[in-house]
Amino acid sequence: MTTREATTEIGYPGSYLTRRSYTGTARIVGVLFILGTVSGIVSGVFVEPYLTPTTNAAQYLTSISEGGMQVMVGAFLVFTMGISLALIPVFMYPVLKRYNEPLAIAYLVFRGALEFVMYLALMGVLLTILAVSRDSVFADTTTGAFDSILVLVAGYEVVYYVLLTLVFAIGALIFYFALYRTELVPRWLAGWGLLAALLWLSWGVAGVFGLFDPAATLRIGISLPTESVFALPIALQEMVMAVWLIVRGFNQSVIESLDVAETAPVR
Image 1 (cartoon, rainbow, N blue to C red):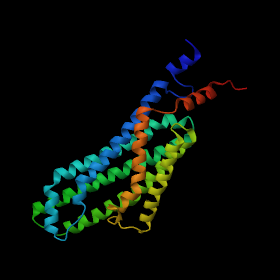
Image 2 (cartoon, rainbow, N blue to C red; image 1 turned 120 degrees about the horizontal axis):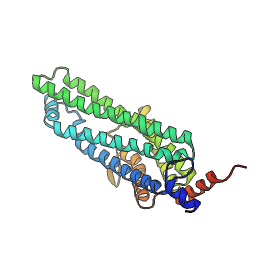
Image 3 (cartoon, rainbow, N blue to C red; image 1 turned 180 degrees about the horizontal axis):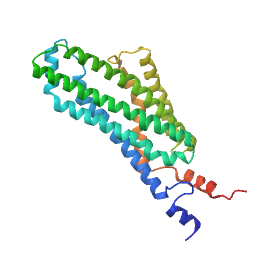
Image 4 (tube, rainbow, N blue to C red; image 1 turned 135 degrees about the horizontal axis):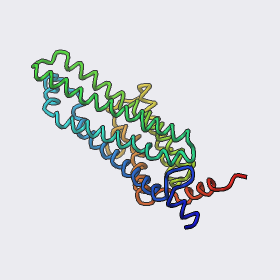
């Protein structure tokens, strides 16, 4: 067996990853991106109708109570989105660590820890809204329940539109900067991610200063939520990159060049 073959089968120096596991990691990350994005989109379809309070408190509380299964499914999909996206930096950590450990750790903190906490908070708010509405309907009173749900909905919007956006965008900037520097994926793809993450970050910063209305729409031929205009570039980029990782994987020449550098004798 040659030195190269041994390295390929046993693992690259300084890492437990083999050539096969690099390919597997790329495919897993691609699948997780798709699973997380699809779960997030579908969860919005399930829960959005219950996050728009009506002027009729009793009717609104009853609609949430009767739609309990839909709210629970939506909450579960939020959790699925959170765990899927949180696992991406876990799988990417051994890869990115070989190139820049501080960036790998920062990515793990923002996308693996902080962002997952945000998704847990969103799921908790949804289930709390459901519990409050059911208690209100069971007790046949709207006293206090409607106001409590208004506060919960406001909290949901702050976490979703501001805090999660900021954490997501900063984590994405770290990730795409690392990919751009390492060239593990084509630079045009990583550069697209950087620009899209900056655009999404600007939406989050605007939210901190109250410069937007979450319900606002823009008319560009068709009427679109303002949020979707800012989110679309990063959403499309992640889906393109997911397919790239599943089909093409990481740039093997970059991995091999690092392998050569690590195996070179120190003079």
